[in-house]
Amino acid sequence: MSEFKYACPVCGQHIKCDSSQEGTVMECPTCFQKITVPQAPTTEEQKFILTGTKKGERPMPTIPDNGPITPSAKRYSGALAVIIIFLLIGTAVAFIYRGTIFRPHTAGWTMNLDRVTIPDTPAAGQIHGQNFTNDRAILQNGALTLRAGTRGPLDLGVVINVGDGRQPENLAGTSINVSTDAPTASRVTLHWPDSSQAGRQTWGDGYALRLDFDEITNNRLSGKIYFCAPDDMKSYVAGTFDAEIRRPRPRPQN
Image (cartoon, rainbow, N blue to C red; front, top):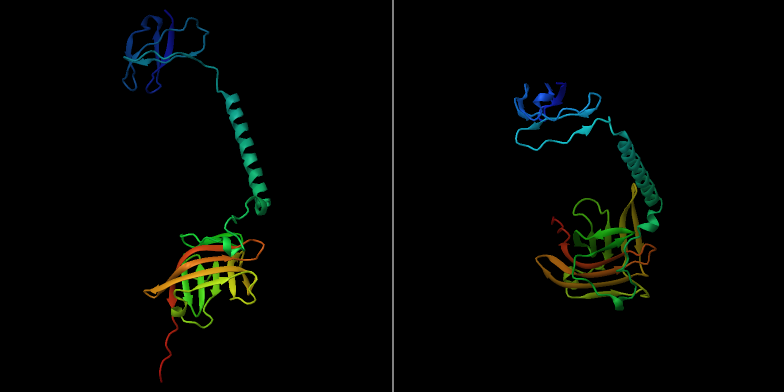
């Protein structure tokens, strides 16, 4: 009878027995699990990791003890390094050519007002290559402001001088159309963030504009806008708005 050792499948405790006990049920001295003793090695020099099986389970196959499988780990590490390198290269290329790869969407840009169909969605578009969505509209002192964000300084938006001294009541129910060849036109200013400073550009002509105002309701003047700027970035704004009317405060009487 030759002695050999096997491992408990539950806690890993090494248990010593002899070949006459193979196939019998023993109790692990550490976790007290009932274990079926595995088949004894055929030779004393055979290197196997012998593991018993829990009582009632099928015996586990023996696995040659060939040491750590380092080649596969090295292959996975090499593949991961290649993937990381390609990601870094792709990021660098995207940053260098960001002006050409990620061009702003200008499908809504046209200087021909006859081709314009204003969408029934909140005003949005592109301002100096940056995506714009109107979050708040204000009509004050004859100027209509559409802006991103609801508070703070105007960072991204458009300001259109529509009043020329007229009261909001005079704008209600009217339309304003300005073609690119108009001899005179209202002043329009675009605002956008530009690195650490604010960008701004103003036009007095050369742009295309269509404004359709509805009636005043609850001190608000809603409507539709299409504005197209003649800049290289093809800035435009199109859609609906609901402008809050801000009236000048009455002067105190002496």
